Length: 264
View 1 (cartoon, one colour):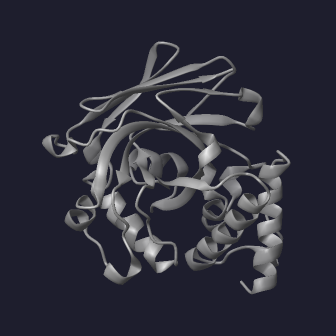
View 2: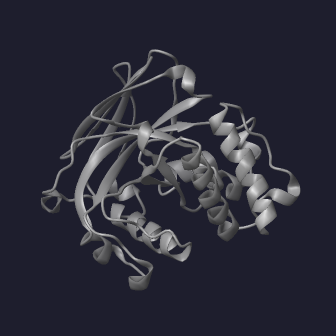
């Protein structure tokens, strides 16, 4: 994509969120053709959203790191996006149901970084990124289907629009996470008291930190290295569940506690 196409596409994608308008396919000449284009366009969208008062990014999310989500979305590889600070809740979150087009939730393991992972130190592996993790927590990722027909969308455009990202609830951070076997931690998600899915940490690319290493390398490659203080959602161990107004979502991950979200 040339600079003109990026500016036009960023204008369309950011306007969709700012005006609460469902998005359709970008004009053919303004679509990202590969992941490099996708992440360049994502950065341009981020600049426009922040400049327009949407908020600063507070953390990041990775989609499609588990078989259950890859099968659900028919996307075989991880995809990254940003989570904006005004959409973040702690512990027991409340959201305005009408602020979404088609809101869904996911059950995830989340890390907070105590140090950055600069491009100059890449490539990263699981053990190296572990040293940068200050805390681990559970989290509810809130996603929004902002598309007229997301099944017909190309993956690069979905990435450019933060891959459905729309907010989150963060559980209490655990700094003593090294005492846990992250691979075996079991998580469950319930809606209105009924369990709707479960999974374990090992569902995330074999180990949750493999997803973090993937993101550290991808972010470094696309000039957006991970920073100290950021949180990262590592991918859902439960298939996305779409909600109705009034729903109460609860997750529990063994060793990490729980988090709740209400959609009113």
